[in-house]
Each structure stands twice: as C-alpha cells, then as structure tokens.
Amino acid sequence: MRYSPIPNSLFINNRKRFVKELKPGSLAVFNSNDVMPTSADGTMPFKQNTDIFWLSGIDQEESILLICPDSKVPEHREILFVKETNEHIAIWEGAKLNKAQATEVSGVKTVYWTSQFKTVLHQLMCESEQVYLNTNEHLRATVEVETRDARFVKRYKDQYPLHNYMRVQPIMHKLRAIKSKEEIDLIQEACNITEKGFRRLLGFVKPGVWEYEIEAELVHEFIRNRSKGFAYGPIIASGFNACVLHYVDNDKQCKKNDVILLDVAAEYANYASDLTRCLPVSGQFSKRQKSVYHAVHRVMKGATSMLKVGNNINDYHEAVGKMMEEELVKLKLLKLSEVRKQDPKNPLYKKYFMHGTSHYLGLDVHDYGDRYRKFEAGMVFTCEPGIYIRKEKLGIRLENDILITKNGNVDLMKNIPIEAEEIEELMNTKP
Image (cartoon, rainbow, N blue to C red; front, side):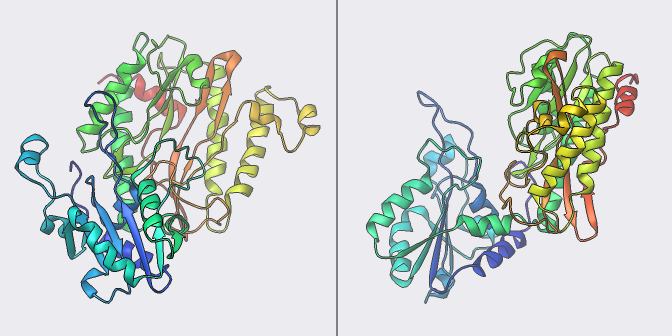
C-alpha cells in the first residue's frame, strides 16, 4: 500500500467496540468488495469495503472477516480469510498477503485461506443463534449492482433458514460516527495532502488554463504524497459550471473574469478529506464576486460555531438557513418583504442555497452516522455553505472539515487559505 502502516491497535480496538454491541451467541460476517468489471477484460481499481477495513485494516480483495465472540473454540472468535496466492498470481498481479502479514495488519491471530471459508462458516453457524449480515443502508445510496454482501445474504439465508438474522449497519452507523485519535490523525493527513495540492494551484491558475489541467496539478501533488488520489470525483467548475452542484466534466477553459469553484480533496489510507475553495481566474475578485464570497464565508463561520456537542443536524441546518437568508437579502437576491411571507416548508433561500451544510466525514466522504443523533465529541463533519447565482454565472462554496471535541471544535483545514484577500495575495505573489 502507498500509505504508511497503520498500527493494528486501531482495528483491535474497533473490533472490541463492535463485539460489545452484539447479542449473546452471535456471528457477524464482513466481505470485501468485488473487483468491478468494465468491459472486455478490464476492471476498475479495487476499492475496499469500508466496514471490513474499519474492523481489520485488510485492503485486499476476496477477504472475509468472521466475528463470533462466544465460539466454543477460542481461536474461532475472530477469523480472517484471505486469498491464497500462487506463482501465477504473483507473476501477473504481485504478491498477496500471507497469513503472518494478515495478522500483522489486522491483529487477528487466526487466519485461513478463503478456500476454507465454507467449512469453517458451517461450524460457526451450528454454534450461533444470531447472524449479523452487512448491507449498504446509507440514506444517499443507490445500489443497482449485486454486491458480494448481497450474494452472501441470499445464499446463506437460503442454506440456513432457521437462524435469526440481524442487521449490522445500525451498529456500524453508531460506532463509526465517533472517530478515535488514530482515525483523526489519518483524516488530518488527508487534509494536509489536500492543502499541498491547493497551494500548488495558487501560482498555476490564470486566464486560459483548462479545468482538466488544474485537475492534473492536484492529482500529481496528491499521489506524490502517498495518496491514491481524489477522495471523490473532483469538481473543477469555472464560471457557470460552478452553478452545477455535481459538475465533474472538468473540460472547459477558464476565462479572465471567471471564478473557479474547486470541490477537490485527497484521500489517505482510505480516509477522506473534503475541501471547497473558490479562486478568481485573473487573481482578483470583482467587487460583486467578493461580496458574495464574504457572505458565504460569514455563514460558514457562523455554522462552524454551531458544530458542538449537544446540537443536532436538523436544528443546525434550520439555523444556517436563517443566516443564509439574511445574507441573500443583503446581496439583494431576496426581498425581505417576500421572505416574511414565504412558506416555511419551502424557504426562498433554497433558490440560491439548495443543499445541506454538513455531513459526516470519515472512511467514506459521506460517512456513516444517524442524522437524528445529537453531536458528540469525536464526530467529524464538513461545513460547506454556498450561494449559486445562475444568471450571474457565479457559484461560491467554501468547505472545511470540522472535528467536534468536548471543548469546542477543531478545524482540520485551518491552515488552508480561505480569506478572499489572502487568496488574492497568494495568487499574485511571484515565486
């Protein structure tokens, strides 16, 4: 792997936390993701299922983790199955983890080859009352392909119909929402790499540059710092493109009076960062552009102050909406008289700010977490208000990653330039 080794104490502690949530006599099963095909003999780069990674640190296809805390065989209370390598695989794909390496990475002492899985699973099924199975229950998920987990659910519920099957996702959403120190350090490293990429752009962006050239600069900096690249599809949107929230074509030329919206960030060791900044192509914001920028920045600072223990996402988003409403009135995009008569269920500010302000961040960019749960220490959220004025071909969004602690919050991106004036100065400073 490109990233530095992660202490297996992280995964050992994660499994301990997980086991405490299980009912007596339980077995839990976690599968790696599939290697996804493209066409002909092509495949996509492998991306590990984040649940098995969170519990084991294993970043390899065809791996399976079994957790059976009450097994009558102590060696079977945690079992990791990994793909057995051979000379052909080693020649064509490179080395795979051997058993000792799998133990070193995960802290799981009992490691078998995946070919032994069916036999061992049958033994544990005969001992267990409950079986916890994994599916993707993220609110934003749209799954149209059959996953390895989905195939497993169908096969073994048919083979063992009398067991009590349980959902593992409520447990994972509860546990993964709270980040350990080791996880926070990994997210911080992803943020640090993102900072290096962003600073690289400040002397690069100028009239005539293409959006994809900016993308190339970023991925160069990310990969040379041990990242696999972008944590999500990069949005490099100049001019009107910034008013398309999920613009990913990145194929337009940047014009002199444009502002570029950059929603771009690095991953590190599978952990995501999430950044948005806006740059004036010419190195100088116009008066109007700067007014909108400052409005978004004020909302961002106000929203960040509310990311603290005890608040909740719904009240938070409502309060942020009120702040944005005030700014849009000042910008003469909304009339106060119309705001006073608006339908509270369909506030007028959503014409210019139509998305949420924050989401959980971690192994997934839109990470696990219950939207009805109060904010707690150890949660990491993005903070990303924006204003999109289609008729002015202007979109401004600003975003940082915020760690909630018992004593307030910590901005994990505090070192990345965000003040409009600082960005102008840096863009116009000759190397």
